[in-house]
Length: 403
Image 1 (cartoon, rainbow, N blue to C red):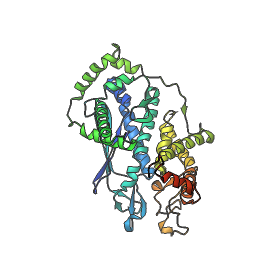
Image 2 (image 1 turned 90 degrees about the vertical axis):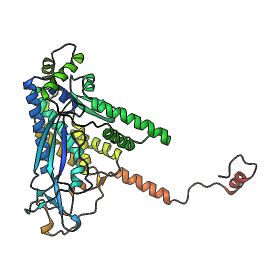
Image 3 (image 1 turned 180 degrees about the horizontal axis):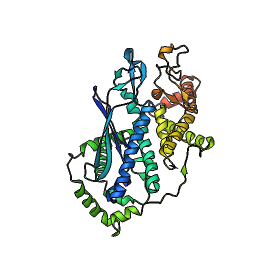
Image 4 (image 1 turned 45 degrees about the horizontal axis):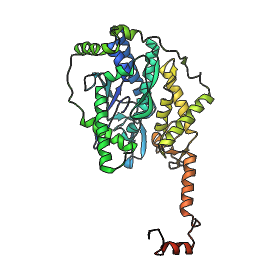
């Protein structure tokens, strides 16, 4: 997963998948500098957010399996077997509260059979789960500590990231040495790319260069005594706190939320319709075709600025808005069979040949644009140069080249 975590597509069958849920840097900094009470509250909120996201993935079918010839049948699973491993720091030794959730690559399906998970859906859903983790975590922390949140622009992305209000960018940078090393190495790779090719790399190429930089600058993991690390972190933070006691400074972050705590019934269809339309516009602006999970991720991102009374309320709104967004687009997946046997239908009547999260969508405007391009390509009535002009251009006296 990326953002909330990361995972990589395996080249061969694996025993499990590592989903890494990492708190925003401002949360990790506040946790590292806070007193024992605050640290316990932040850690508990982090664990609850991880648990809620995994439960959502189970209920939403992001964990699923396949059966039948060539895996053409989509199988829902009863749940997954997973173990969480908590970590407190980054490879650079900076505070970074995160949990590795190792999901076993075997799950029991509704018919009682244990099958391997469908990695395609899991990998496609990592961004959505990452965004959901960030949203759910913010609700838990606002609920418990009254923390406020503010959007922060990022050098490597046009999408703002929400951080705890009051944790300065300079303080976050102080504890982001790993990110700084990656950015410096990425910039060097971009310069080398331009020198070799004579043009700037595309956004996709920059992403690949950043991944290359991440691997090239990755230090070996080191074991540290947490108490000693916390002493070091508090000492390093001193220059950014104007002499304030770190624990007292963290306590002063409390009760800064000024937004209402919403419920799922507080937002009407008109408001959520606007959010759905924005999400579709953003997703369609990035890709010609997309899936439900792409839309779900963007809807979740668009709602980061809102605070909810309970994370379950946020999830309800996200699902509702995602459904509205899909009503604005066009499915271009193969049509569902009209008479699927009862054996191959789910409880809701849909066909088990359908992979809901992998169905492909596009917008009508994209289809219209493609149609115009096809028509233009087939048109034989375009402008033509008169024969006498062509002859004049080909004469030795012409200033034009033969081409």
